[in-house]
Length: 92
Image (cartoon, one colour):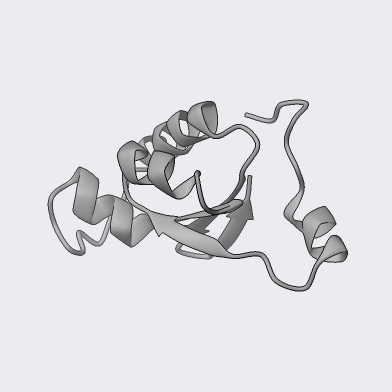
């Protein structure tokens, strides 16, 4: 999923103290957020509510999250993406 244009969150944090992230739950909200923010936050719970139609399903398919992040990354390749998973965060 990495491309030559990717920026590391750690590298960006070394340049500035604050990076605003906004949560997205579908590709449409990501495309709008991408106009105003450098960082996109993808939460498994928000994704579950949007994708599965339930507020908290207790289980989110990892393959569904990966596919969603890939779609978001394809439309916003220059943006920082932070993914909330159950055991921590992933910087993409």
